[in-house]
Length: 338
Image (cartoon, rainbow, N blue to C red; front, top):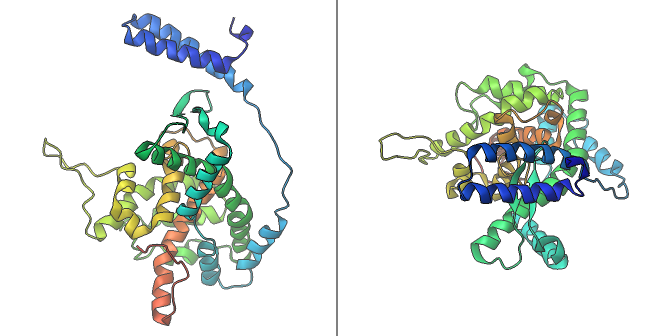
């Protein structure tokens, strides 16, 4: 019986390997399907073996109050600018250094591979160990670990100590609605014509903590907006196929283009990519697009962070325009424009 297995996690791994071996050997389809059903049962059972751990609670009251104070007592535009642009994005070089040092200091944690599973216990990504890797393979694994480190430690802390306190303070001070925030999407180089209402409703919903609406409105729009930005800079975002069709590039291919990094900046591209499509990050865009995100997950750190990033992107050209009139240096050093 399944319940008598000493480890459902181990059994699932062995059975998955066995199914692949039988598939390659040409085993009958009926036998493979029977084993796949068995695998699904074991994977469900393996979830009960997952253990949580806790550490000493940190006192985050000081940064939370600082975030509130950062936007308190200002007019709406100033509060929005301070809120959206007042927190530095991840420095990729520093994060890579941290991940590399962790791998060197704790080699046993990175010696063996690991699996990422979904809420049903299904393996959605395999992470090989770093031992023996070099060149492009090592760089790829380091990048995966960078997304993982950001998602586990950095982004969630930013949401808890900065984004949510700031959002709540602005809501309490101004109760921003569509009329108050319409300027964010009007003639904005990140918002394609005809999409203004979608972005506006998503941004307003976020301030009112309706992240179910905000996530489903804003997350799917980002890919098209990135294409729109690239095209506005004269970059071709289509692929010419042998049959004469010209499908546009999808999100992963867009992030692989050097022009995207040149226009948006390395840090913003890293954060968007990690939040939207990387399985070692939040993978939130893919999960929303395929209907995997539950109602509760719409109120997760991923949804809040992506909403804040969209607000930040929409405010950057406004901030730059105001700075150019005042002839003052930009405050977002190292971040690209739009």
